[in-house]
Structures are given as C-alpha cells and as structure tokens.
Length: 444
Image 1 (tube, rainbow, N blue to C red):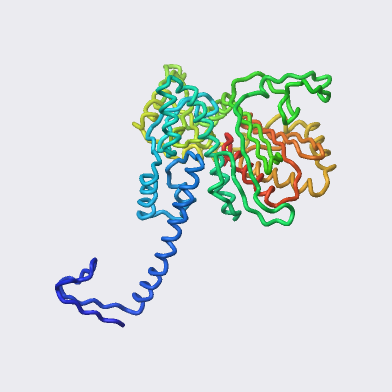
Image 2 (spheres, rainbow, N blue to C red):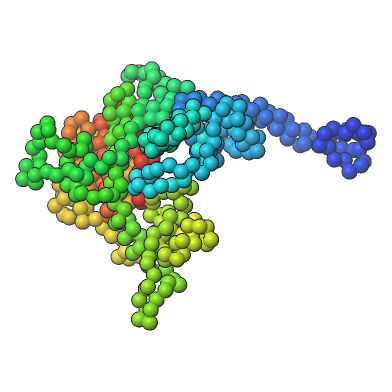
C-alpha cells in the first residue's frame, strides 16, 4: 500500500481529497494505473494511424459519410477523444462537410433524397459549386451521384478486406479502385481491384427468338451475362456491378429490383397488423395503403423488406415528418412472424417447376469437383444473406453463370463468376458478392 500526503495548497489536478489532504493508493490501484498508462500510447498510435488513413482516402477522391460505423471501421473504437480528433482532421485539412445537400437520383429508382453529413475534399466541393453557378449543375449532379455510390461500395469492400486481413494501400486507393499488396506465390505484388456500377436497364429491353435462343450473332444487343431468362420491358430498378482484378473480370452481377412486386408483398404481409384505418359501414377500408421506409433513405435506409412496412396514408405522412415514431425492428418482426406461419411462404414457380429443377441438378452433377465447391460457396453466400434461391445455371468452362430468384418479391439476380484458384481473388469476389446481396430487397 502507498500513502501520499498533500498540503491543502497545490493539489494535483483532478484530485479530490475532501479537504483532508490524504490519499490512499492500494497495490491494485497502482496496477490499474500501469495498465492505463500502457493503453494510452497504443490508443494514440491507433488514432494517428486512423487519421492518416482517412486523410489518404479523402485525398484519393473519396466521398465519405461521417458516421460512427466509419469511425469504428477506421479506429477500432469510438470515444470523445477519437471524435474530437476526427473532427479536427477535417478542419485542418480543408475537407468540407455538407449538411443536408440535396442531389438527384441517389437511388436506382429515381427518387430525390437528402444526403446528410457528406464529407469531401474542398476541391470536389468547389467543382460542384462552380458547375452549379455555370448553369451546369444537373450535369455535375449526375457525376457526383456516380462517385458517391462508387465510393460507398468501394469503402464497404475496403474495410471488409482489411478485416480478413488483407494489406491495402490507402494512398493509392480511389473510388472504384483498391490496391492490395499480396505475397502469393502465383503473381504476388500489387493487385489492382476495380469496381464499376451501372444502372442502365439494358437487359429490360432485350428480346430474343425463343426458337433459336441458343444462337446469336455478334450484332445481338444482349446483356453480357448471356441468356438465362427473358426480360420484359419494365421500369424496375436495375444495377450491374463488375469486379476486376488486374483488368481480369472475376465477378459480374446484375440485380433486377421489381419494386411493384416488393410493395405487393409487403402489403400482403402486413395487412393482418394494420389497425385504426378509415372504414365505411360495410367495413371496407377507405384509406389507401402505402409502403413506408422505417429508416428513411436519407438516413441510409435500405430498399429491404425488413426496412419496409405497410401503413395507412395519413399515418405515412405523420411518420415521414417524424410526428409518430415506429419501432426500428417492426419490419423484421413482421417478416419473421409472417414467414413462420404455415402456408405463408410464397414459392417461386421458376424454382418449383419439376423439369427446371431436374435440369439444374443434372447441370450441377456434371461439374468438376472444384467447380462444385465454388458453386456451393456462391450459393451459401447468396442464400444465407437473402431469400434468393438458385433457379438456373450454365457452365461455360471459364465461368459459371447463375440465375437466383426471390420467390417472395420476384427480385432477380444474375451472376457471372470466373473460375480462379487464387485465394486473394476468391476473397475479393466473395466480399463484393456479400455486399451486393445485402442490398437486395430480402438481404440481411
């Protein structure tokens, strides 16, 4: 035990002796002080490292949401000191925080949303402003939207790859590009990973002759993934994402988001939970039923059935203006309850048709062992993170082309995966696939 005695004057800062000038420090207290003193340098180094990483990312052109998830991914922990350092970093380095900036078409479905707490370099901010004052704001808006989506997707993969762990060079990284330092015997060196995102619904306009569906000429305007299903003209959401490593495409995904089917599913699921709606004397509902985002799009809410609930139009207006509060888990609970009841799980006709299922099994049985393992990994990644189920498959020798269908919402996902032996390439493809699947209507 250690005993320290102070006079009433000149007490150490922060010490409260209650006027007695006496402090008793046990051996346990001394051990705790030693542990804390050892943690401070580690914490300080972690913050410095995080600051350098954020600065490198911003200087590389990233547009970053200032939120706790980003801090957690970068620093590993969040407290007052970390937040203060984080905020000081942007002030000292001329990064700009834009509160409540409204941009066009930030979602694939053509709605305007407000993006909160966007942080960007002052150079990027000045370009947007100069385009605005030049009367060219709409054109630059489109470029900004593309950069924002690409930045977000790249950062999701960036932090997931770091956790594996894979060494990443933040200074040579940019939206849509991650440079990875590998030590693999086959190749090694820097591997440049590139992501691209397109929301042009090319596959919707595609038509083909059913009698000659397997014969194409070089002039056919068809999706790169090839024919797996005939797509009809529609205005649903569409997204195509390509992932390349050293300019070799290892993954391509087209997701088809059938918004009308998703709304119909949510309304069917939630009707038993709706109460207080306006009704006439025959008990017919007079009020229009609408679909509400619990976490709104401007707050990073997803187009996911767990984030959607059916609600009366009057209550919808109140919820959108935050005059009534809805439990954030409401959609999740309704989803679990609805799908636990017998007979409520809607099955896809494409999957339950016996002939289609038999052909799928035959195709899988003809795969080589390594290709079966690859297919199984992809199936697990998709089916464990969504309600998607494999419906069709073709093997081209160089890659697998797969069609997944969500039987509840009609959402479709077409996937091309290149056959590769490299572990780094497999991890890159797996990470991107999971991040894409999480954004699907029934993604987890």
